[in-house]
Length: 332
Image (tube, rainbow, N blue to C red; front, side, top):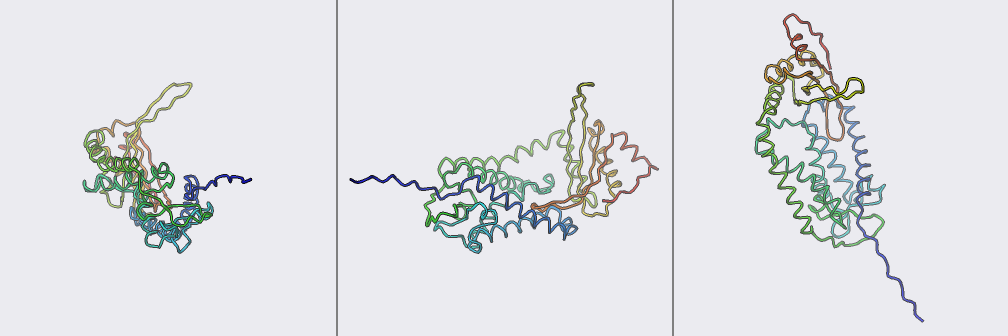
């Protein structure tokens, strides 16, 4: 009498979303420690780089993932080692260093561009769609495919070099990974198109009030000696208490990033307040104008800031600007 054998259930060789996410978080901690060490050793140098500081972080991150995810480290970063997953090519073997470096570049570039202190109002018009495409189009597409492109979860950085992430415990051999499904391809195409054309509409909004005045103030502040980058935002605070009910106040918040720790923060804040009051009529109607003078660095994998903040009503700012008013120097 023969006994029929039960069919063998084969586990998928591809690493799941959560294991890849946890591995990335662990790698983020490693990169953060590297960035913190660089910040402690080269604070003023990194601060002097300004927006270009993120290039340092990008190079460190690309080198880390490019080396670790290649055959030089068996396709495993420290995070992937802990989560027992690895990066392999179509043949099931670890990637060579160059493809692994390209893969890391596609993955890292949107992050390091996003959040960089870039003065959009001073950039050439043609560059805005390119940045939007890289930051939002590519960045969102990577996240979308990691979540929904089943079963392989191959994302743009994997598709770029023909790689995938598999369970390290499985000897998968050559993998039939296929291409991108039509449905996913249409979604990615739509995301890229939307990201590319979005700046055309946001640019029209920036040419209207009150944004037009805020952009003008931002440009004038950025042009001041010693100011590397400035952000200007108008808002409203609403406070609800049991005793007095609802109370609202309007504010203008200005952050100026400077290129020297020896900057006289109080003098610069007064100069910025004068610019805001003279260039934006709405600034005179605000309840509070808050100005922060900030010195430090952001390299993407670590950041550190030292700041001085000044917050007064428009009338109080004008009082500080009166001839004969003494402003005590406050260094960063």
